[in-house]
Length: 217
Image (cartoon, rainbow, N blue to C red; front, side):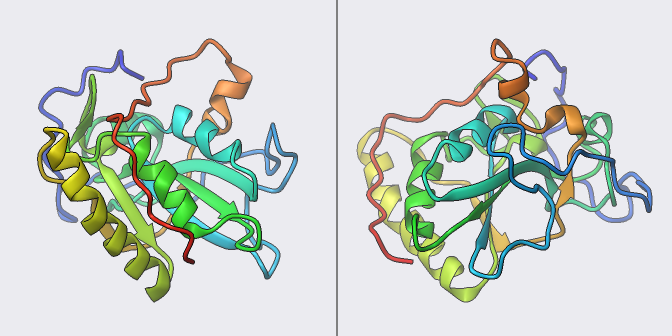
């Protein structure tokens, strides 16, 4: 994804100026290419969802599907204005969306806190509308919570991680922490992209700063 020229695409649009989108969702195959599980809801009742933006979603999805206790993952677009956007539309910066990964997990096998540790340690949350060489609003850092418990753990983890980043010479965390917005599945070829294309681009990179969120919910 690093080849896309998205200079001048680092300011979010508003609802009035965003692209109109469409009523029909994009078509995908409802089967995880690695885990063999369904991508689309409804999910089994004991499972929970998490939603993260950490830059290019290809490498981020691979990170999470390898974590024990994760039942399925999917890439998509969220926290914008345009309904059912295409990848090309998101890349213009005129939909407001972030590239995100949906993580469906079994809380009996992996905690939300453990997922947050993976989140903080595998990208630079201080870069604003970018991740490394990937520039644009779609690459911003974001945690999108599904309930008050997730909101509290996310806020606590951010507060705990900031001093560690500061001690290592990094700036202020720019991660947005918001209620989970509508999630739009990305095109089928983006799903589990690095499994289908093992030599594909992966822009994921952390700061090298450890984050011990804990083992809470």
